[in-house]
Image (cartoon, rainbow, N blue to C red; front, side):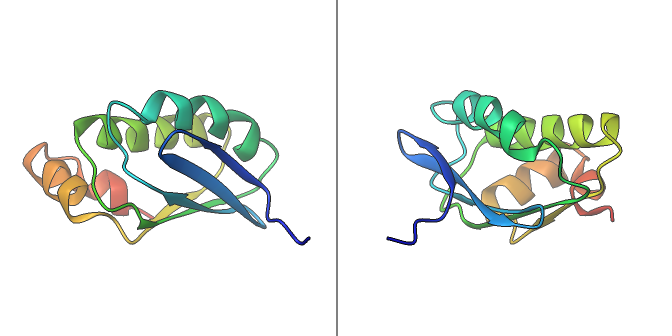
Length: 107
């Protein structure tokens, strides 16, 4: 069986695609973000760059936005360039309202 390495629990997962690329699947909300953050620590370690595809996230809330900001903070601390792809509509709207949308789209 050719299983891809993944990090999962509950209804959200973080799938490692290789070369610093990851895909999140499931909601990014208060019920899932703590686990995603904990599991991302080991998954992101050692990557020169991080590219996180959020196309598998059907919904998100302020906790999801906070997780993304925390990922940015940690990536900067480790000097890892980070890019998000396919931002969920709800999280993008929250980012605009909170005036942090440029933070999420910075290259």
